[in-house]
Every structure is written in C-alpha cells, then in structure tokens.
Length: 165
Image (cartoon, rainbow, N blue to C red; front, top):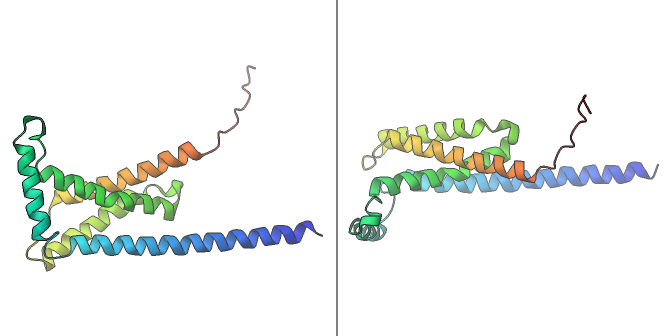
C-alpha cells in the first residue's frame, strides 16, 4: 500500500515537469518566431549604421587575397542559415527524435511564407529562392545537431548474444 502513493506522487511530479517544460518551450518558440518575423518582415533587415559597418568590413575583406571570397551574398546566405538553426532545434524538441522529418518541412514552409510575404507586402525587400534554400538548410543543421546530441546522450544498448556464441 505504501509503494502506490509514492509512485502516484512521482507520476504527478513528472506530469507537472513535462507541462512546465512545454510552457517554457512554447514561450521560447513564440520569442523565436517574433524575432524571425521582426528581422524578415521589416522594410529593411538592419539599419544604416549596421549597413555601413558591414560595407566597411566587407571592403576590408575584399582588399586581402585570403579573405576576398567573403562577399555580401555569402555573408547573407550564412546569416540565413544561422537564423533557422534554432527552428530545427525547436522542431526536434516539439516532435521528438522520431519526428525529425518535421524540421526541414517546417523550415521550408516558414521560409516560403516569409518570402511570399516579402514579395507581396514589402516593396523594399526581394523574395529570393536562395533564402528558401538557406533557411531550410539552417533548419536541417539544427535538426542534425539535435539528433547528434540525442545519439551521444542515449545510453548504450546491451548487445544481444549471437547465435554462434
């Protein structure tokens, strides 16, 4: 009789812990979605101060043979990849390791929605297929990092004895 209440308290604590984790994940997901919308759906992705600093930095890279390959297009592509890495992480946290396939789909759909909104609503922004590719790649990178982490943190499975042993 005494073992049953302890298990009940443990089950309740686990349910409360999972509910609290989902609330935190929902809040973080909302903050991330707001930040991505704020970055991608404004008239300009950044202010003139950042633009001039970026121009100076890229000019400095262009003057050197070893860094001349660092161009605005490559920096923008990398930034788009980096912006969607958290989406891949969040997707795996929501859908689990077995739902890994949701991350690239959500990344592609979210990116397509952003590009469509930019094309229809924002005259100063240009919708670009390269952004769709970069954003989807970012979600795949985040998903891959989560799958790698899950693999590294999973306990080893005991080996079954073979029939020949």
